[in-house]
Length: 106
Image (cartoon, rainbow, N blue to C red; front, top):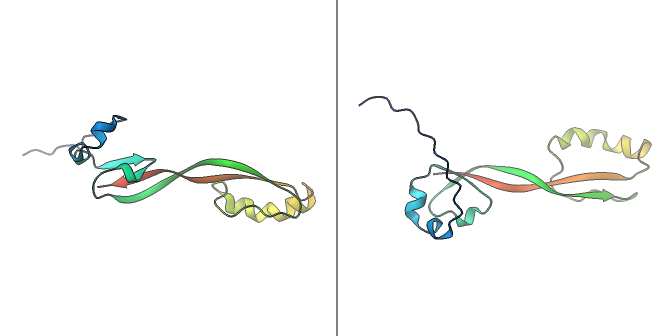
């Protein structure tokens, strides 16, 4: 018995028939999936990758909608009020992010 290095194999199949076969999933340790409900078997979520979900123009007197702002948005939040008051005349633009890809582990 020698030391075996981990083997990385990537499968980008979109073959729906193959993906309905539990045997297909048994050979996989990690999955990146937009639709985790389509992954067969017992999987643990280990992360989520967020992606662009649109933008929003906030008019004077309005508040940005609840939800995720851009990554690093906490820093932008600190300067939003002074910028809206002094620079943009209360107008504001917000980039919205939402979960896009689930990272699953067997």
